[in-house]
Image 1 (tube, rainbow, N blue to C red):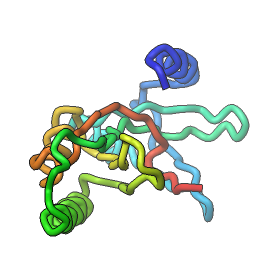
Image 2: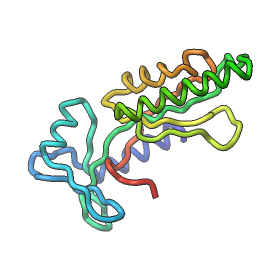
Image 3: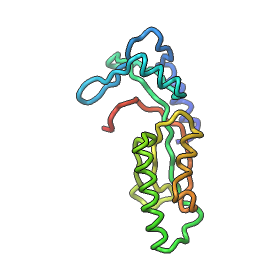
Image 4: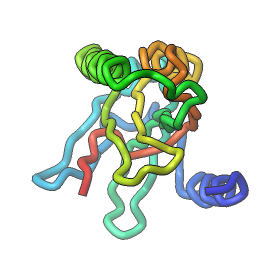
Length: 165
């Protein structure tokens, strides 16, 4: 998606958003089996930690949805792919251990490879306050350090707590 499409989507999205949480006790997030609610204190804690939060009024249901800025790391084919099979296999194990650590620490929410052999090999979505932190965590991946993968980072907005459909 080019930057102009992103800017248009952000502009449309911003019209329906309300940044004020002072007058609300909780924000609802729709879930398949019910509504997840975030208290005013939980929202305050997230914003104090540096997370960017927006409220979005669903025009159909009139529910207030809490949106959070995440960071999507595109893992792209790197310049150094000359490792032996044994070396590449070792890096893959270290890469998977790194991703598990990101999940265990609560920094990554979803990750996975693409099913083709294109230049973009996979993605990881980081739930951290800043793009600098997401970039630092992504670049700590042993595959990136070895040059087998490169990172392209983008901010990305999604409903906090919403499941994949």
